[in-house]
Image (tube, rainbow, N blue to C red; front, side, top):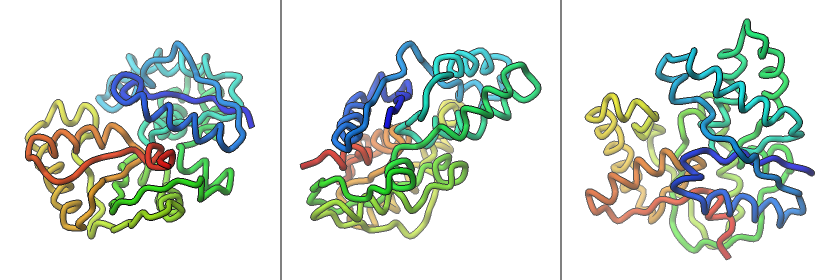
Length: 237
């Protein structure tokens, strides 16, 4: 299968190893991967802030770049939700509405694609650690992804998954953390407390933005936790 990888801007700038791990896994499974170059942000920060006039030109540029892509894969539930769920809403009533609706069913989050489209739950990884899984809000509530990442973790040798008692937001929310830092920090501390209670060594997620926020709190409080993207776990030997 020919796949087009959309690399979120925060992955490109801060966590390039996530994109590298994603490509390695897909190529290991025998698929051809092209990286969508000359793409920057998907427009979500402006969209979430209510600045739709500013978000639309960004979205249109993405649509133009991905117009011929057969399947678009994104290692982020947040950006995946933007392209699949919110582009049709953002561009409704514009000349680009049809293109947004056409792209939506071709967009997949990484874990969702492996399990739901390829039927893959075991890629031969080994990660001898206790982990807990964080559901990013967009991934869980907008893309309805819950089972897929857990099935992939279940296929990792020597990995023990311990679920948190509550499914709660990490508090990042993109621009939310900048506008309401005190609330964002408090929510992140609740997430860290939930993760610590599991006794896990790692918090795993499919959203590097969530992990970036949580890791910042972990570092400042010197907590015995680490964060890692699911793709990085799946390339561990």
